[in-house]
Length: 234
Image 1 (cartoon, rainbow, N blue to C red):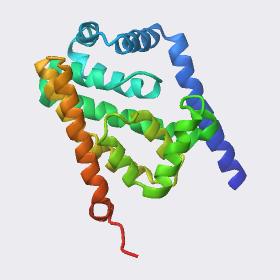
Image 2 (cartoon, one colour):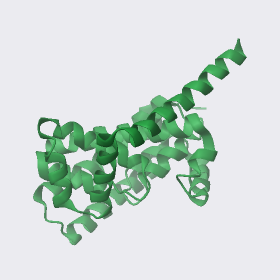
Image 3 (spheres, one colour):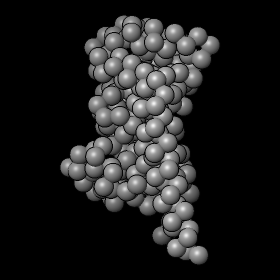
Image 4 (cartoon, rainbow, N blue to C red):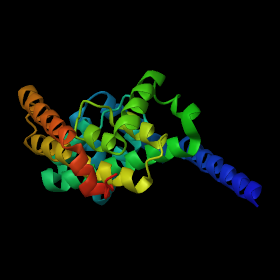
């Protein structure tokens, strides 16, 4: 019975992977969506990204959410530019929500890939030296490592998600820590994005404040972990 279950899970895992790959190569709309969206993000082309999203009309919010989710799976595509663009298009309130939801879905996808397919697959997406760093951080701080790093925009989002998937952190804890931890950065950069100043000084100031907040959370991590994750005192 156990052998049948393991075989079924194996078939399901690689069936899903095959479906994703087939969709990318066999369906031009899917292929074009990924290629064009990734190109605008890679080039930091705010205007091109805005036109790309708005071209989908009433589906623009869903397009934004899907694009944020997809970029999380692809290397070297920073989601912060999409966060700024969303605020520029939809206003910071709705833009923040779409960015938050898309980033959360993307993080869960990364987490699931690592949990389902393991380290050999993750190594093809993330350099081993970064995985070693996250391994040590997770061993030391557990689920709080997710919360703290989400508050720090200079830490690669997807590296943390993949790294968490290789640990024993539960899916529920990961979703909670990610959902809460990404709120401050998304709101801050969305407010900047709505004003579309692209001010380097403003971005540096916002990033510095977020890092200071992450440091605050780090020093009070035990109390926060007890409050959020119902950690029992030993």
